[in-house]
Amino acid sequence: MNAIDQKSAIDTLLLEAEIERFFSMEAELLDDRRFDDWLALFDEDVRYWMPIARNVHFEQPEREYTEHKEANWFDEGKDILRKRVLQIQGGDHWAEEPRSRTTHIVANVRVDKTDGAEVTVKSRFIVYACRLEHDVDFFVGKRIDVLRREQGSWKILRRTIYLDQSVLLSRNLTTFF
Image (cartoon, rainbow, N blue to C red; front, side, top):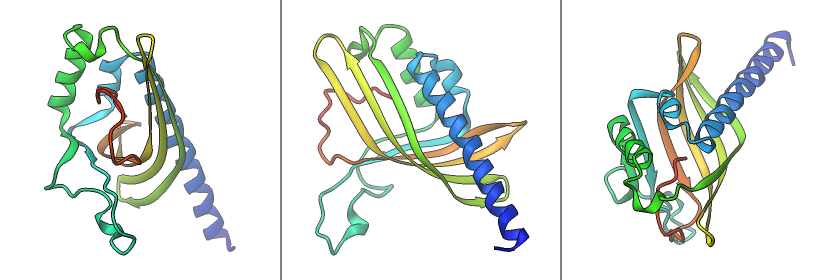
């Protein structure tokens, strides 16, 4: 490995560590129910999208998740995310009264590509949500985030969330990812 390749590898590791810390901070905001601070991490034009997983024949792996124009669990911008947060904060959301206790774990953070000021990051997640005495949910999957550094901090421009389960076993989908 020459000196330029070594510097590039070190820069990538440092960038991944920085983004991993950002995702850890984001997870803590969600677990602490600091939803307004969490919302501030998103660009005004964010696309927050979760396609539906399908069980498909091995010869059709490209069909495993629904496309943008097909059905999805959600496809939201910042306005809808704000409304969801307000609903939870106001106690008006029957599925979040009392509120869920959550633990978000983000791992395997890897910078997939950089394009100018934007960085595409792939990661894996586990979200544990517990509400009342017996409502326990585990959400496991992958994320692809597009981030941009603005004034020294990261903004989330796009988030695509891929749940591994093809049938939603949870009674609701109020958890943020």
